[in-house]
Image (cartoon, rainbow, N blue to C red; front, side):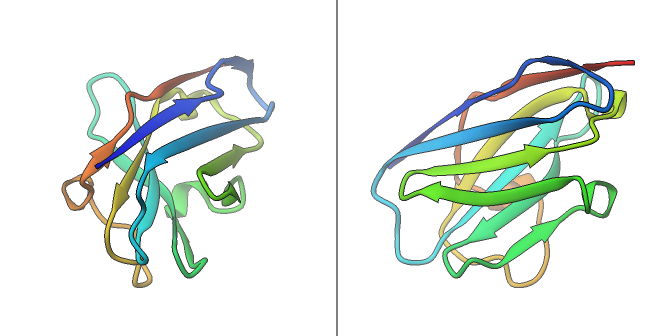
Length: 124
């Protein structure tokens, strides 16, 4: 059992930057993936970035070059977002599963543990 808590969401102007954090408590298995998803009102939850226990990273095409996922310490994974756009407005959630990325992002149903999310609002 692991618990995830996201933080860092806020209201920002278009073009700005922010960093979201996902703090994980509990035992992490030897192999895992930590992913970031986002969900805007009336839209499907979509994966935007992931990092696994080997350090492999994957990004959605729509965010490549602007989103960077990293591990800050043994229990915290960050998502840095630059050049924010109004379309980035969403609830951002982190999630954990017990196998690696294997080259691509996958859907929400592959993930076992979820945080409650942190809201990002970008104004033009």
